[in-house]
Length: 290
Image: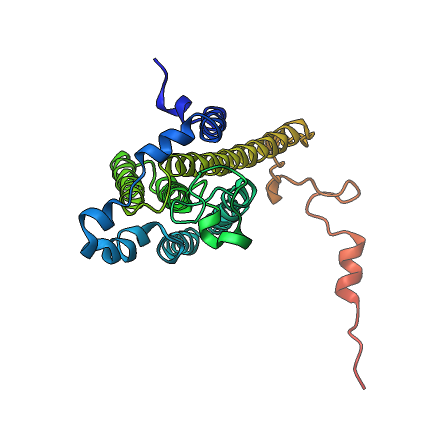
């Protein structure tokens, strides 16, 4: 069974976008025209302005861009990193570069334009304005791309909390359904415009996520390689031998002096007879100090 991650991989989403675009250029064009209708004007004309200004505006730049910037700057300040701001910048650049570029390149007219043939390269911004570049849908792309980038940032910095990720998934689903349903009900786009818009937004979002994850893995690998090199350098560095403490020498025994009574008298003096030196000492006259 094919997993959800494989279905939403960059090659799978890109292939689906190319296939839908080719079908829109050919057989799907007549199918678009048969499914289209200004349903709000026909069924609920009083609600048309409200649907356009409130539910349809949720996926517009005036709402979704401030939400993305608020999430990005809040997380950047909290975690002291530029990563959320860089992802927000890449998201906005991808929207204008890829989604806007495809709009200008394919130049498909809107159902509200004079040309309702729904062909590619028949419209254009110069002749029809916003109604001359309807494929892919910008609101459908923003619902996936910009809100998806905000959800990705929250999920990354939510410590892998499964409840947070699940709630973000439900929020993304509701925003996407709102964007597609309201735009189709108002009749601003051909049905295939909405499908193509979601696919383009998903392709750009997946590319941004893949690049961000690759940079994180690369930075982690470089950090670990530096740590391993430092450990190897510390291990290979020669260490000075630690001197072994020598035991202190035992004190030598000192000779015990003999008692004075046991010291023999000089050999030249007989016992009991004073010596010549003693006689001189007795007869020496002390000198007078003047």
